[in-house]
Amino acid sequence: MSTFRESERLVNFTDAVVAIALTLLVLPLVDAVGDQADRGGGAREFLADNAWAIFGFLLSFAVIARLWMVHHRLFQYVRAYNAPLMLWDLLWVLTIVWLPFPTEMISTFATSDRFTAGVYIGTILAASACQTVMAFLITRTPDIQHPETHLPRIDVLSSATATGLLLLALVVSSAIPGVTYYALLLLFLSPLVVRVLSRGVSSRDA
Image 1 (cartoon, rainbow, N blue to C red):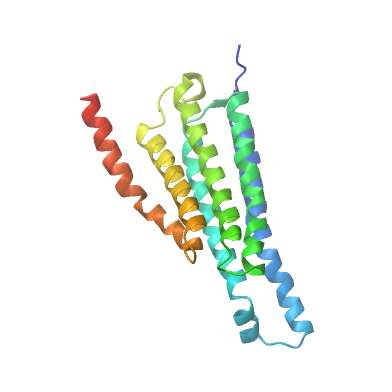
Image 2 (cartoon, helix red, strand yellow):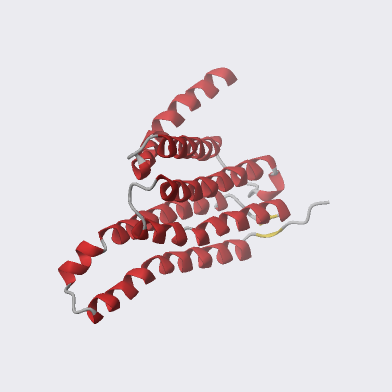
């Protein structure tokens, strides 16, 4: 028999970890300011020398913020959690905590390094995959959801589409020299792909 617990504790824990991960992203830049001052460098020189570190921070902040927004939307429909949902949420948290590490790699290694880009995109892919599994768990376990509201099928489709596009981005960034992080632009196709797939599902159900 599955044991269900109120979701508030799990959500609060997850939110706290996300907040810490966002804070960790900026710490290398803070340390770099002190190092620059010790060398007698100016602010303009600092910005020029750390352009890719700043890019990595902004990119990862946007990525984590977006992942958290999707996570927040999923758990709006959750009133309780069981062991499988907690496990996948912890795996999702692991990807969020890990993300500052490949972010630091962006500023340390060459921007054309396909391995670094692969680690970075692969981390985002893992986070998205965890969210997709959680979305399926929520829809397939009625006792998890609020009785009055249920997770829309379009949200599950959207999460699965993002995961698929990230997998494609990982393949493209690894296979084609010079593409690296530009492969993430494939995510802008997500609304179009979801629209097409949702129409196909609707016509099949009709």
